[in-house]
Length: 215
Image (tube, rainbow, N blue to C red; front, side, top):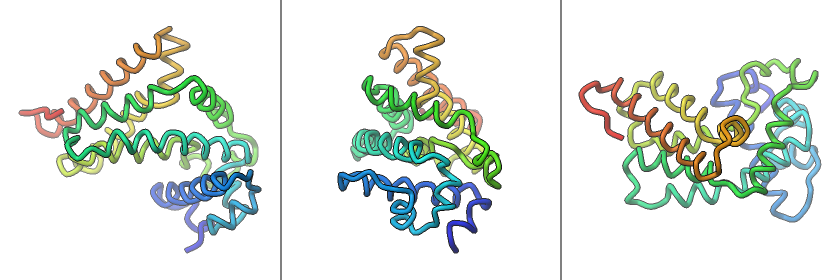
């Protein structure tokens, strides 16, 4: 099945297509070259049309790939220890990794939001425009990985809802609210995201098992 045939399909398939495009871009960037859309499409084994369905602007794709490369290693590092099995600790580790960003990474993140907050005409006309995420698929994957110890304790609806709720309290958008609206320092914002993330996990587990919240 080609990428063109999955763009309007299930969210998981669209996310995999987007991931393949970004990972191909990262690999090309790591070779020390700035790739063209044609080179990215060839490396991801998709058409140029598919690349543009997800990334109407090459700048958006290059920025997304750069941020992913900068963030992936840190998230992998905090989730790697075998002893980190408590779901609350795992979610906290991801929250701290995503909120404790350097000023340069924060600047790139703000640029990415600027490029994606308003769809252009080409993107708005895409069949998948309404339901295809414009950024943040890595954040969803990292949150799902952090929640792995309790996945069997939650039915799919509750699990997906918890993932979505956590995506609202960790990442670029919460960071901007913390800085620009609440006037928090980096450290204060990080602690707020950790508190909110743990509260959401506790609430989800208590709802699934009213007798015991495990985080």
